[in-house]
Length: 299
Image (cartoon, rainbow, N blue to C red; front, side):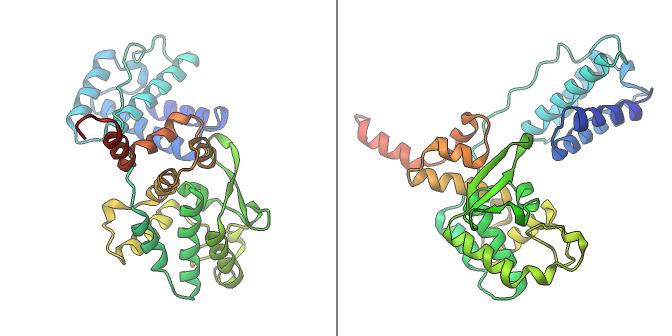
């Protein structure tokens, strides 16, 4: 069995047996294909031929490249899972990844815009054209509910419940949660559904999805990303400061700044671990200033 066969079996396993998210499967697949390409260039035809020394050399070369620590960590996890799978399937007799340590990921604080900047992006979409109504609804819903970009793309009309006040979201790990929409976001969404969505729902490809492209298809992550970048550029927000996930960060950070309970935010974001949510407490520097000023003897 060669690398290509081994990779195909691995991807099939994590996608269907472990029910791993499609985006994660794609990322791990790219990581393994990259590794296999390097090993093929060294003359290896299958994963079983690769030695621990080869893997150490591979990661040493990776560390010299300008690559985010999170990407390197993900590649190592992907390779560990790949080789463990091959061992379980008895396609290799020993696991060369067994003694390779997982690198520690440094904590990176999420990028967040101010409330004023966030409102400026959303409020800049003022027109009544179908495109404007759609884009405004996308921005309002993502900021108003803290949705992931994939959750926004996959949102269906049947997921709008409680007279439009809640969204039923199927998040990571197929975990379902209910998320409040908020009055302003709910109104923007209703305007889009009532006066604009029909313009885009041109074919059976719509399939009940809420947000549709001009071709009547559900949005891709890249399509949502493009809308957010374009609307942000119109109000002078630099491209490197904004993304769909930044709107999610803004949702959490702005609510925390206004005193929201962190456990409630955890539930709304769909975080399995409270530690993931707690990183937003480090974004609000004003809280630190307040504590420092109150308690430090030389403040």
